[in-house]
Image 1 (cartoon, rainbow, N blue to C red):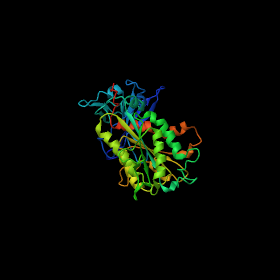
Image 2: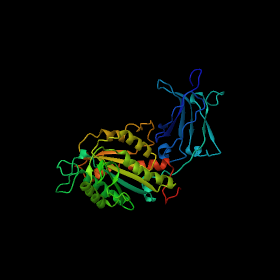
Image 3: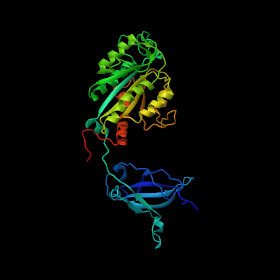
Image 4: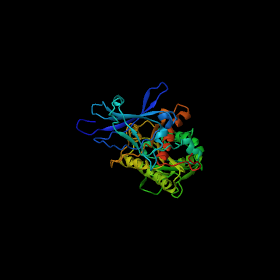
Length: 380
């Protein structure tokens, strides 16, 4: 407690190691200038807290934060998860917070009390639990048809196929689509293009279906997707700019319908965007991603060619929370960026591993935060 004032308390939770030492596993936020803090909910894996043993002692320390970085202890208690779990809706539990050095003082009772309002132990489903339990992965793909790729007839075009029927776009489509179609229940891929003029249209489209059928953007398997992509190259005119927000919003609309239709983890959307890098609508794209972060949706950005990918790196936002122009922060991280040429000489499995690296965690994180369980699996 500060001199003549209130404290700035926070909690620390410690687990006991095999040699009896205490190891810090969690620290709460600091509440400034109060003697009656109410901390945010604490969600911890039982394994990390007590090695899965609910009878194993854990130590809770309450300390007073100081600006100089040296906190002052207020009190501590030794409890077990079994004891904490007695806290239910109409039954709070309390533990005395004591300073070990003051216990010998006959007049000393405690330095405060820790009040546990509610404690629940619930199963934390894994990515595989959701898939085995009936959650459907819905893959969508969006392809960059902007003029920066250069006309397909030119040898240096990123869309030029040549005698070996290959380019970087096709390599990514075959690698990603060829593998992921086995995880998509109906193997129907909604596929879109952006940054091109459609036949008989002057306006540049940023979310046209590769099928060129406004009523049905689905491609029946990866071969149909490749066929639609090649067909588009002969029918649309590469143009500018490269705007990502429209296609993100289109897929987000489908994910939003699922969110409000079910209270179970029935479906999760994954949008793959293949682009040569420069994004012309960054503010709108940031806004679209922030709003999409509230939905069952992940976005994988695959960069082709050797252009500057600084826009895609910014959208990936691994080092900071992505923020919309409005100031709203993303609910969670949903974007992964992978530059294709970094893996072009490696086995395709290494590229796919990088592409899918964050997806399992993002799926788990969304369903955990929404408290949704697999459709065909009940809680223990």
